[in-house]
Length: 93
Image 1 (cartoon, rainbow, N blue to C red):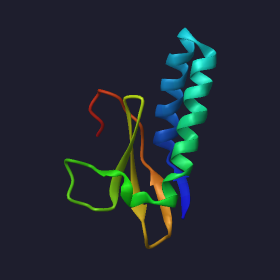
Image 2 (cartoon, rainbow, N blue to C red):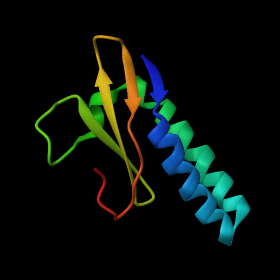
Image 3 (cartoon, one colour):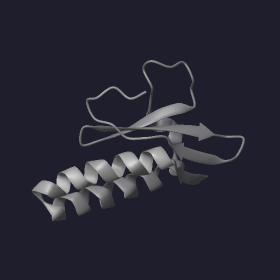
Image 4 (tube, rainbow, N blue to C red):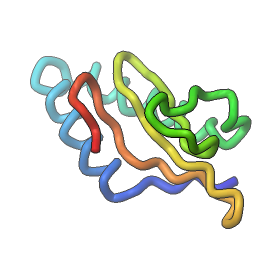
């Protein structure tokens, strides 16, 4: 499966990385690198990740990394994983 990152995810990730970089550029780069590596591995076994608690759709899952939630959709019809966004404690809509 192909992993596709939405524009929303890219914009939200940029804000997070920029915020971390205010404290430490090296930690921001490490956060980015490790997160992208984990995201790219989702396609190996996407159904091991937890379901979104508020949804009944089995194809909407989420990766948790360092307190951040990365919701994604498993699009079996098009054989791809769509990374929808990233958030921390704020509510994601």
